[in-house]
Structure formats: C-alpha cells, structure tokens
Image (cartoon, rainbow, N blue to C red; front, top):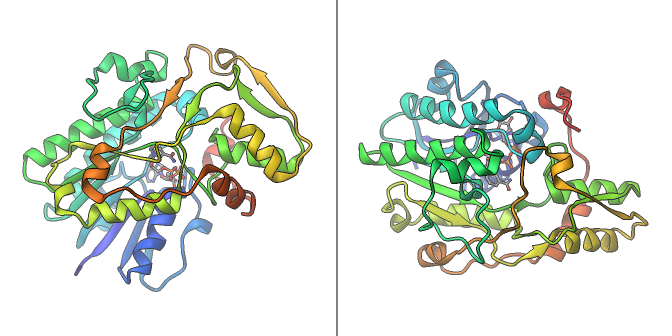
Length: 332
Ligand SMILES: NC(=O)c1ccc[n+]([C@@H]2O[C@H](COP(=O)([O-])OP(=O)(O)OC[C@H]3O[C@@H](n4cnc5c(N)ncnc54)[C@H](O)[C@@H]3O)[C@@H](O)[C@H]2O)c1
C-alpha cells in the first residue's frame, strides 16, 4: 500500500487491536477518534501511527484524517447496551451522520470497510442467522424497543454502503457478533468484562431473566485476523457492500458464561437474576444471537476461533480500563 490506513474509532476496543494488526504488517495507520468511549491509552505507540482527535461527524476532521488514505476502516460509534439504551438518538446519529460524512469527505479512491452490527437482525432469534434474512425498518427497530436507535443507525450505515458501492466506491460491510477479549471495557454493559470485573471483586454477577439467552463470542484477535483476511480477498470486495456476518458460531448461555467466569476467577461471587425489562424498560432481550457463517467461510475458509474458556482466562488476566467521556453519563 502507498497511502495510510485510516481507522475511525481506533482508540476503542476493536479499533486499537486492528491498529496493532496493521502495524504488525508494517502499514502506516492514522486514527480518528473523539475519545467519547475510547482512550489514548488504548492506542499503540509507533512512529508509523498518528492520532487525530475529532468526530466522524465533523467534515473538517474527517477530511484531514482521510486525506491520502488508501483504506478507511470505520468503527467509530457508540457501543454497549447501556449507551444504546440511554443515548438512542445519539447512537443513531453517530452511525448515520458519521458514515455519510465519511463517504462525502474521504477520497473516492479509498476502499471502505464499514462496521455494521448483528443488531440489524433486531429480535430475530433463529438457530443461525443468515445475511439473506429479510430485514425491515420495523424489525430493526424492535432491537431498540420499537424506536430509532443503535440498530437503525447501523441499518442506515448499510444502506449508505450499498449506495456508495452503486456509485463506484469499493465497500466491504461487516456484521460482527459479540467480539470480546482483553481490553474491552465493562463500563457500557458488555457482558464478559462486566462479569470479569464483578467476579474479581467478589460482587454478585447480574444475569438478566434466567440467563438462558445464548450468544456467540469471538476473540478480538481472531476477529481482527479474519477482518484482515477479508480485506485481502478480491471476492469479498466483489460483494459491493452486501453484508458479511463475522463471528464464532459456538453458542454460550449467559448463565453458563457467568458460572465459567466465577470458576475461572476462583471467585466467591454469587449469581443474581433480574428481569431484563426492569433494567431496560420497554425493551426485550434477544434470546439467541448466532451467526450463519456460510458466506464468511466461502470467502476466507473456516477461521480457527479461540474457545470461550480460553477467552475468559485471557480476559481475567488483563488489567483494568480507563474512564472516558460517557462515564459521566448516569448509566451504571
Ligand atoms: N464489540 C462488539 O461486539 C461489536 C459488535 C457489533 C458491532 N460492533 C461495532 O464495532 C465498532 C467498534 O466497537 P468497539 O467494541 O470497539 O467499541 P468501542 O466503544 O470500544 O470503540 C468505539 C470507538 O469509537 C469512538 N467514537 C465514538 N463516537 C465517535 C465519533 N463521533 N467520532 C469519532 N470517534 C467516535 C469511541 O471513542 C471509541 O474509541 C462499533 O461501530 C460497534 O458498533 C462491535
């Protein structure tokens, strides 16, 4: 590559790991991040990396960061159920307006990797959800309690991606399913780091309802390798913005995860159950969220995913996390 790689949201969890992967390949990286949930402490130190503090909704910041970029990886956004619940409108706007701004202000020659989310599947809880599932505005909004929020923002991002591809941009759209691992903050309601923090402290682990909900967790480093692999495949770019599920299809129940964390931490913590609707009024929890990865496998083969127990152990072994802007918001 001749130009640099721009990573929006690169001071966050996935973005900082992707930056490390890019640097390990000897590539030049630029990060654009407003540090609303991310932190400079997450950003790897390297003379091949530069950081611009600014918002993806600010055309001037985006223009400056994207100038000369060959590849733009767009991760900036609000993540985590607590933020998605407390800041519905902002979650939508950052995804929708941020993506529109990025498309308008980045060089037309720059390839774009856009991060959507499995949240666009709304409350659909089939065995393994395929990209071919029909999605409507109503089904998307069911994720945010029937309102426009995080999921609708990601759905808008996907539509903008398709339009950009139609007008000749090279676009890759990814739908991640529960990425976890070392460095993820517990502050915004991500389940694994929240359990880990509580188990370490000997505090009770809060499980919504009976904990029979299942998720598929994938390790962030496997996730980044798979993303890099997709970026290297012309076949993936040939999809012209059609989304690709990316995640480990192994299912884990939330109760099973809580028990595993307590066991691996050697903790005396107890599990307490609380109705989901009491914690997030007006919302319904997604019962199962498992990706159909046939499309992913057809593009990169079958990735080797780290098992959940190993991920739990590695997450337990990593240190705490810095506090940032949204930590001032009354969400804990
Ligand atoms: N972690 C997951 O399991 C998961 C699953 C599905 C989708 N995603 C998507 O992947 C992306 C990254 O997720 P993450 O887990 O690393 O979250 P994260 O919160 O750790 O990272 C997001 C980063 O975006 C930055 N940011 C937020 N608003 C911004 C703005 N307006 N301008 C510039 N920067 C801004 C934050 O400061 C943060 O550094 C997000 O778009 C998220 O929706 C993540």
